[in-house]
Image 1: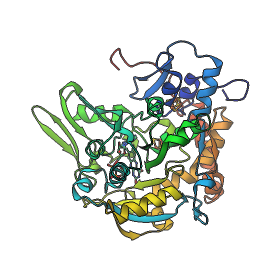
Image 2: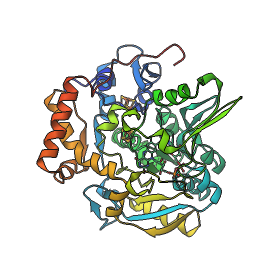
Image 3: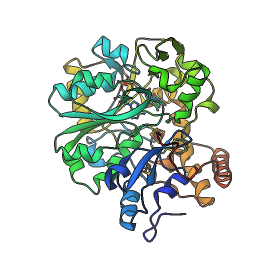
Image 4: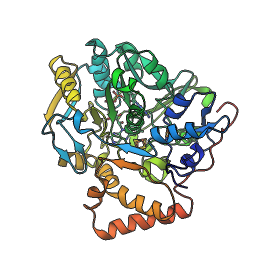
Length: 422
Ligand SMILES: Cc1cc2nc3c(=O)[nH]c(=O)nc-3n(C[C@H](O)[C@H](O)[C@H](O)COP(=O)(O)OP(=O)(O)OC[C@H]3O[C@@H](n4cnc5c(N)ncnc54)[C@H](O)[C@@H]3O)c2cc1C
Ligand code: SF4
Ligand code: SF4
């Protein structure tokens, strides 16, 4: 099962190889009448063709899918002399900061930098709208794509949404508005858009800014359903399901008409084996948003909170236009910078990202040895990252991936709709 010029992979093959993250771009491009993104029994959003897709449609999907091709920063978008770290990629600036508005800082996921920048892009007239995601009205545990045209709407969509999320389902419609806009999303969503920009000139014309969070991986919806089950609640009773925010990290809050329950971040994410992270995330070559203008992260030593704080973000400014936005947002008070930081401090704050970036190349060797397709990576230095491991670690990663691939543990079942309402 390999993509080559003669035989593009079908969407089923992409999913079964464990390469789909459910971004929704394939449905947006070929149309809902041809392909539908559905919720699967595993609690993932995956494309299912309505009818057999044509070879041309499969070729387009192979060209845009972030499961098959992942490109980092383009040199032309970087300011001259921008340092490039082997692990962290390019950074025109590295800082610790937060939203200027205390209410935004409090309500958002970490320090509110992404929301504050989104709001500032609108208020400064740089863009007309922000494409991102929010809680699905009436289904607060689930996530849907949204366009925000004012500051209140951007704030309404703030927060981390850990389950499946498909921000690009309506990307074609966003482009069709022919107005300047920005995207706030996961790194893989930006990789998908970057692939599309090679086929569709409107991306370069109208998409003015891309902002991402540094991403540890998207969980299956089953993870959220487990929380509900543990509280003895059902989804139809829910009035609120907030993953975090209202503090940093804030509580996971679940409410029905009758009662409210909460979990600390540590309770929610105590055991890594129960995170239910989607397969694509385990081999993600760019979970740190190298293709975006600005990436924002949590900033806790060791990668996890030891308690609550007022909310801080690590900020990686990558491109020249990201730098212009960052400087203007500071000057106008939209964001506040507490101090500068360094690549090596990011290592300490995000040790899981460092481990993954160093492991991916060897995992691809193991997957390829087992006959699985692997993403093509461009300007992500994954081989140089692997060279920071000793040979025994790379061998272990490669053998482990080969074994898991052979046992079917890296892939996914043939995608199908969970139930008529899924
Ligand atoms: C699945 C997931 C994994 C994460 N893993 C890490 C990690 O390993 N390390 C780390 O430092 N931080 C991680 N975070 C990010 C962290 O939780 C904060 O979101 C980040 O620090 C930005 O904070 P903020 O206050 O600026 O965000 P906010 O101002 O609250 O803005 C968040 C923005 O992200 C968008 N968004 C939320 N969830 C999704 C989603 N699933 N898909 C697309 N867009 C979304 C929202 O629409 C909103 O615009 C993760 C977040 C998520 C959702
Ligand atoms: S990753 Fe996105 S583009 Fe690729 S198959 Fe999945 S939903 Fe479609
Ligand atoms: S880890 Fe990578 S593939 Fe998974 S959601 Fe995050 S950016 Fe996407």
